[in-house]
Image 1: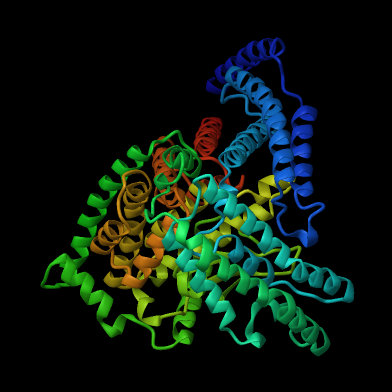
Image 2: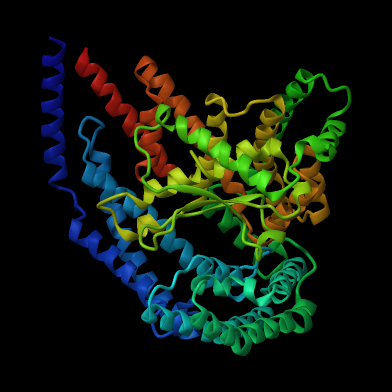
Length: 590
């Protein structure tokens, strides 16, 4: 009887919706496909006519890109309106997977195009540095794992290396123009970049990353070494001279982005982009303060549990200085990270129905990046380039790499964090290419932080100190919600930010300083982690409440990850649709 009533309701709703939908301006697959194809063609053309695939940053190319993106944005806006009208006529009883994918495509593409247009209008390419190097750190990422297996590839590789001085020159020209227009990286970022260049120049030639692609081939190594001597190292020296003797003197003392022309408006936009919500810096700051208070209370519970007699500050000092918590050798740190990763890999089937094919390795952070780098990072795998996913562990300055935070770091960067999320995204089928390349920090970093939380359920924190390390990492992300808008929007000094972070986390002081420097050079990105994690946990609680005994954690996780990197508002719709569909399954069984 119940099924008969349900069928009558379904047919009635179906008739109503179908007659309504016929009168709407329905977005066609051809329209949306055409917009996506034109967007992807535009991306391919940005490198065209510029030597050897370095980013084309010429004035003419940027102007042409802006015009093309504005046209695409207008077309996409019309499609988005039609999609929304159509979605408003559908009930959860009438799911349409093709329509849902079209909506996800428009949500992501709209966000990406709007953000790129903002950057072009603001001219953020005129200050391309950050504390990790900015554009010239991109050179390391581009060449670090490149492989050359035949003469044709070597010719192309050689062309890239030979054109590097021209790329440096183009960047210097734009940075000069930026300072003329009141847009410049702050002194601290410039000084850190000079140190990174010194690191390259002081490295023995045989150990430079430029030679990685030709290791084992004496003839090709000799040719690349000649290019290093004649072109690349002189270009690095010239860029260093430019920074130290010209750019630095005109760089602002204030670390916050508010110190440049229209900097506050720029930061407001960065917060909206990195959270994928219409949030203000002030809202972010207030959420951060609330989270800091909550996590601090949980940390105190662990201090009481281990029987430490002293203040919170004294316990933090104990963690930062007691040798039992620190590795003696790089190998010891890498081995522990590898073991944690292996153990968690064995638990994954309990929490996920679908896992990526791509393997994961544990390797040290490249020496050219390590001094100013974070404790760890994920370097995505590539089927096209035959490269496995890499969880990079920073073995520089071992006295700042405590074991007690290693489980949380490993879960975040490796599995079930970035490796799982990014490689499942890379393996998605029947979606536009831009979806596989898009990484939205609120989703990706939110998932990484959620993965640290999931490790608690998986039994990955073996001691109270490792659980305190997990809370330290959560507190670290909560502190970001305070110190990032503090520096970039509320006129905080670097010293204020360092003090706030060091007083509330057990991060080493070296890591506190490198982290604060990273936020200075990358306004807004740091707030994405905690905002994303809070949203994922909120949606999990909603699904658990609505589905009760029918809730299955692996299905929830698979649903979160199945569409790749999406805006948080889109994820909200996806999970609510998941809840509706799971309810129907239960009702059908009943």
